[in-house]
Length: 154
Image 1: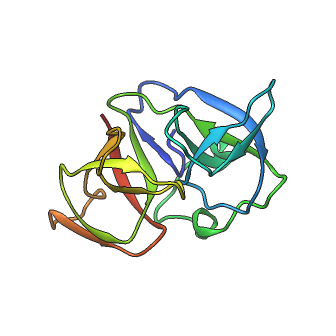
Image 2 (image 1 turned 90 degrees about the vertical axis):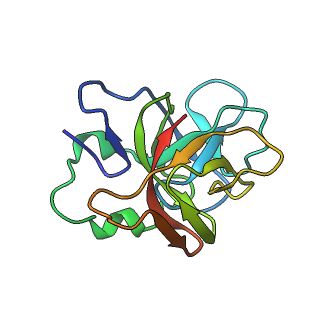
Image 3 (image 1 turned 45 degrees about the horizontal axis):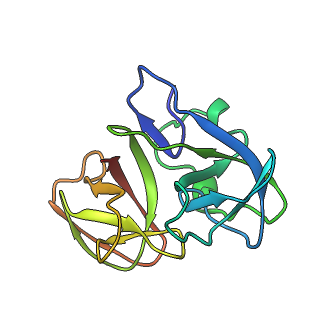
């Protein structure tokens, strides 16, 4: 059973971290990092490159399958202070994630920016490679800030 942000592979469940959303309201598919201390972690968008990025989703996302088109909820902000789940991305997994504004092509190497969105790699760690959305025929994608697109974790 697939959910809104985690797309597969379907033969295994993603590892997750639960926490409370700190600092700001954020959209599902934004990369976050856990704060220090004991669980439940306060998840923050302030990605600095020093901790492994996680991918944010609603707390009940693992129980909610995707049916047909994207639910409107995927573009609704999660409010500060709410309980959330964040996926621990692993090589070969497919997710929907937020992109920074720009033009992307299939296979472009990407990294996470300080706003928790994917962007072209600059001087930083490669986190994922862009892959077209299911059913998208064009090998390129033009993103506005916070658009969702499918990524494969490198």
